[in-house]
Image (cartoon, one colour):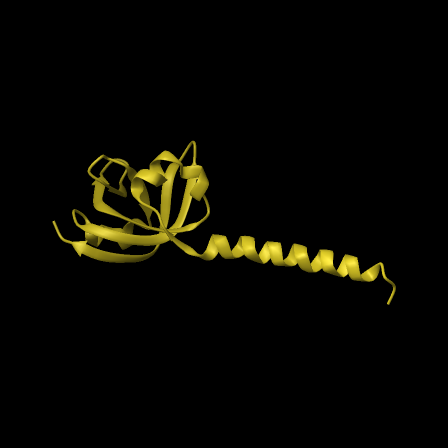
Length: 117
């Protein structure tokens, strides 16, 4: 092997490790309170998060969200999965997305009752 192959190999290995580390941070579940998701949503876009609040619904157009006592909110999907928890306090886990036009959204992976209304 020539001496020039080793640094290139190290560079490729380093880039691959950096990519894997980035993927890991996107896959790792982070506990993020609703006020943090509301105040800095872009920092959590695309990440798996867990948060908690009370499930609420609006009829037209129908949508569900969780909120805290200060009305920090995150919309929840799919609606059919969260509907049975309406009015109850829950802890949710899922993929968080933020868009300036569509707001803060969480696609559910897991829902846990904290208390019923």
